[in-house]
Structure formats: structure tokens, C-alpha cells
Image 1 (cartoon, rainbow, N blue to C red):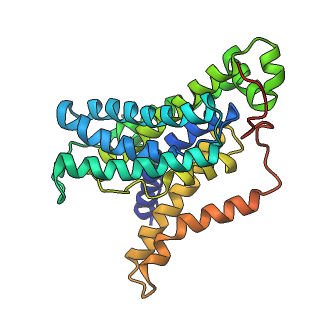
Image 2: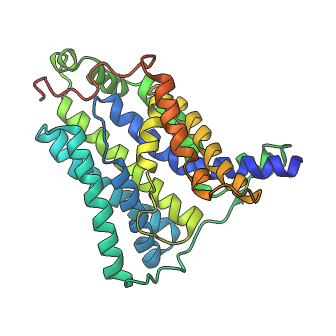
Length: 306
């Protein structure tokens, strides 16, 4: 029983890791008043970038290339949504469709229609001495690929930066009252652009995690809506970095449960289990409707930026 619980919790943390990376970046982006619907595009671009980078220089080169690719996709979105002040929803949707189609095309050009990147190196679980022997949660929290430990450090760092630094205060000021922030001398457009790039960078690492810490290969469309789930996680986490990380665990549990239910040999169609995380997304958004604490200027473009 204890072994089964430990294995389940281990799966929860593993599946939550890419969601947490994407949600953490999107939290910073939305704190600046920008909704990056194109996050899905950064994730899938990061996944392809990870395969290409790992093929040239190993796992960590793959993560670096994934971050660059995710950032590049986010830059396209920022060009339209921040610089040109186009509609954020339409721009994000277009960027997502472009990335999904573009990665599929590039993958076939690079590896052929059958796919040949099946030997991508991956990160093995790295046990933390002593901590990994903690009953029940030891393996779940401390026998994970090293990229998960990077997330453990990144969450409190982003939390501290957002709420304890002058730059973080400026970011939140733009998201709450851009006119007042601009009057105080904050360069709103520059801050929003950088926030979108940061979100894209973590989105790319999220895609890299899917490839280099989980699947070991690239499949067209393998992001599977995780960008949109990450946006829901940001809402559920109330635009707080720690809240987003905890909400990611909830969705990780939903994903882990679908594998558990399939393993029980139920006669129900397996598509019902696959839909479980997406149904949870809708339920979470419905449950938090009207009770959220979103940045007051989220999605607004009706102010003069500098």
C-alpha cells in the first residue's frame, strides 16, 4: 500500500513538473498585464528544440536550445501584442497555430516523415541522499530528474523577486495600474516585453522537460494542450508563483490518475480517462469564476505605453 502511494506521488510530481515551469512563467507574464495564449506554442517549440539540441550537445544543450526556441516563439507574440498592441487573444492563438504547424513541418524535414529521433538522451532520476529515504514522500520529492530540483529553487526565487524587489513591484504595478506605473517612470512596454520572454523561456524548458525527462522523443502535438492548462493553473494559483506550483501538483495528480484508472483494466473507453485533466481544467475555472484576484489591467491595451 505504501509502495503504491509512493509510486503514485512520484508520478504526480513528475507529470506536474512541465506544467509548473509553464505556469510559473505565465504567472510573471500575466502579472505584467499580458495574457500569452501563445504559451502552447512555446512549449511545443521547446520540445522540438530539445530534441535538436540534445542531438548536438547532450541533455543540457537540449534544455538550453529548448529555452531559446520557447523564447523565440514568445518574442513573436510580444512583437504583436506588446510592440504593435494587437489583440492579445488573437495574436496568441495565431502564434500557437504557427508553432504547432511549424514544428511538425520542421520535424519531418529534419528527421523524415517516420521520425528518427528515437534515441534522444534523457535525465535519469537523481536521488538526494537521506531526503530520498523520507517515508511516503521521499521518492516523490527527492528521486526525480535534476530539472525538477531546478524548479524547487526557481519557485521561491521568483516568489521573492515578485514580492520583495523593486523590479517585481514595478512588474505588479504595470499589471494593476499601468497609467500610474508609467507616471512613476516605469517603462511599461519594455517590462511587458521582458515578462513575455521570460514566460516563453520557461515554456520552452517545459517542452524540453517533456522530451528530456519524460518521453525521450518528439511527437507532433505532444504539448497536448499543456499551455492552456498552465493558463488555468495560473488562475487557480491566484497569480502567485507558489500557488501556481501547488496548483500544478493538482493537475499532475489528475494526469497520474488517468494512468491509474487505465491500469485497472476498466471497460470504460480510455478516452474518458485521457479527458480527465481537461475536465478538471474546466471545473477549476468554473469554480474560481468571480472569486479570482487577477491583475486589474490584465489584457488591457487602452493606455499609452512607453
